[in-house]
Image (cartoon, rainbow, N blue to C red):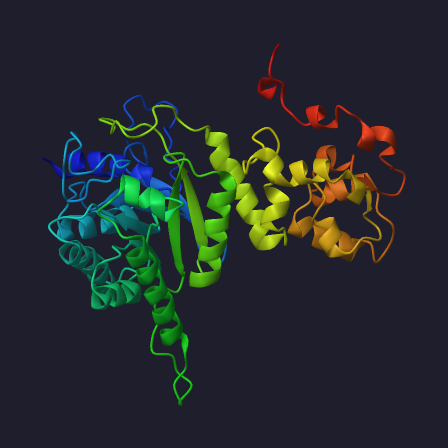
Length: 406
């Protein structure tokens, strides 16, 4: 098998990992997806650096051979899929050549478990270390294996910018049912060791120096959504605990989709992709907007997010007594509750109103989504009137394609 064949196979297999959002494109006029600068089939994905920059990564598996038999994984040992494996030197060469051609700024490397966890982790660490030894200063994200030795995890963190360990499913019961060879306690234990090692390396010595940089971009994890019966409240509650306990940078949500040669124990129907999107929006509200979990998902909704409207709008519609909010007087925490306003808009409003009262047009120029916000705010020359009490207010925000036809 040629290295190009391996790249096509192992970059495609990596698409199921949401820890790096895939965004390859086909350039217009390139029917076969080939040619200078083509990203089709080459495993190019986009991620964000700690400073907010969007960076392009080569996203591949080292191998799709795996000794585990996780029901939801296309690469499980019982799956009838073509197999391939990169050598250490092949991954180093690919990364270097892609980087020299300005296709990528870094590497996202994951892998099936080959032979043993330590053997696989050793190979992945060797790739990262060899790249660094050759002067590679690009971003490296390594998907680590929970039961690999602590020494290997430490080496991985010293060579990589970010480490990630997947918790797989939202509940321990789900992991035991669909990935019985994996141990949830062991997974969390490995995440805890990564956090402690990061803190240890971050401490300064008596001379004021740090020991070194260990995973400076932090650690992340991924949960598969829809493979088990967990509702959105359970998923978000678990994510909340993971953020608090392990200092994660991100929890990624990956909507389950029936895979080739699928196991009979899994559902045959895809969960709506909108569910994945709503979970990300709710995750953002929990982390940056000071929402409580009980405000986002309630018993009335069966612990599920509203798929038709975003979580903040759903909360506003259910709490109309908290509105309208006067944008020229309200504190920041109240501005952040307004649908269509983000943290940057709230900061701009507070800064701008020091020099005068604001109109809707002023806020529009700042970047506020006025079409969504105008029913919930008071501004100079504007009040929502009876719009806030309208029985069809929710329907006004639902796109026609989302409405049920009777």
